[in-house]
Image (cartoon, rainbow, N blue to C red):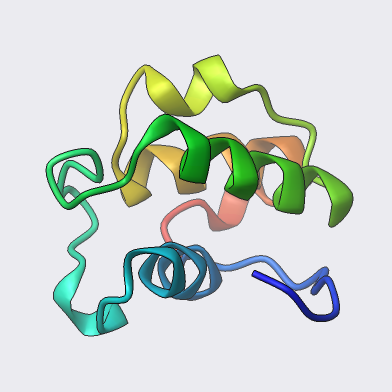
Length: 89
């Protein structure tokens, strides 16, 4: 998860970030797949929260942990960065 921090938000970006951490193909991670079942642990989730905060998302770990799916995470992040109308992207 090194490299420049990107400030462009999309569900595809979240999927790519998670896939990179899990060493998975992004296409293999569905919107409603339980990310914990796919191997995401709390340490990696915190790394994502930190990275996304640095990129401007005002999110808490607990918001993501409550429902570990890309669909939920995108709703939380889109709301925090003012893209609530695009939460289905």
